[in-house]
Amino acid sequence: MKTEEQYHFPKTGIHRYVAKYIRAQNDLTGKVVLDIPCGDGRSSYEFLKKGAVIKAFDLFPHFMKLTETEAEYADLTETLPVEDNSVDYIICQEGIEHVPNQLRVLEEFNRVLRKDGVLIITTPNYSHFRARLSRFFGESDYWQRMAPTEVDSIWFSENESNKLYFGHLFLLGVQHFQSLLAFSGFKTRQRLKTDIGTTSLVLGLVFYPLMAIFSIVSFGFYRKKNAHLDPVTKDRILWKRVKLNLSPKTLFCKHIFWVLSKENELHEMLARLKKMHRISKHV
Image 1 (tube, rainbow, N blue to C red):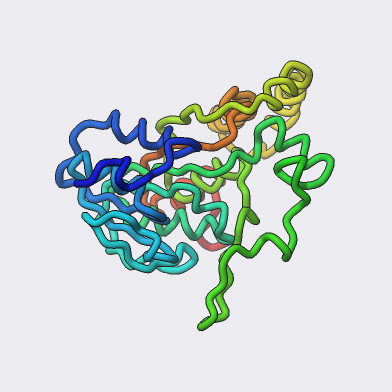
Image 2 (cartoon, rainbow, N blue to C red):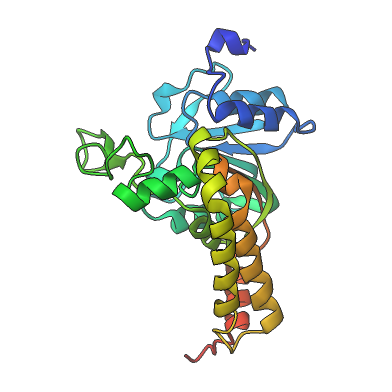
């Protein structure tokens, strides 16, 4: 196998955190890893060194640099060409923010992942202080950028089809993301630290106390709603969201880097939600 230097993989940005995480794992010999979008193969490379079997997919498989594995075409907006319950790990690095129907993507990940399998997702963090302030002023994630437009939101298009591939048009806030994960049967194992934004740190000195007060007051009001739900379950869920909103990783890190596990099949998750809301099958 070639060295990392020979492949010229970047050592900056979110990938250095992903690589560090994979390198810290135990031997993965025989484990099947789905890497989508695989890009140039930087994450596949780290899993290969651990002995894993790689299934690499991308909209543009020719970007793959690895000689040890071959990338195939797949589109996250469509059904994945992978069998049910056939993979142990999924790595989706900087991909989900390009897809309009993100719940559909997560449902597909649930379908192909084995029970208790691991899902690793990274995506730009739309909930850190700088992004929140930028949204307030211009509905953008960064004050130097305008809000998404048709000028800069299309990154790729295919001449032979009507498909468009979008840029950062579907960025996720942590609360929205957490809800999608809950609906698709995933449980959070870890939320890992990434690069910390200096601007967010400065803003935190001013706004963190206000945010804490607002979050706790909102919790106090909102826990009175949905009286049909079990109060213990409701309070547990809502309080977790308060803590997520006030987490330093949420407010100061530039990227979301979450490690999740498949807790339920989709039909099991639907049954749990129905039971929680006491929805009759005849409704």
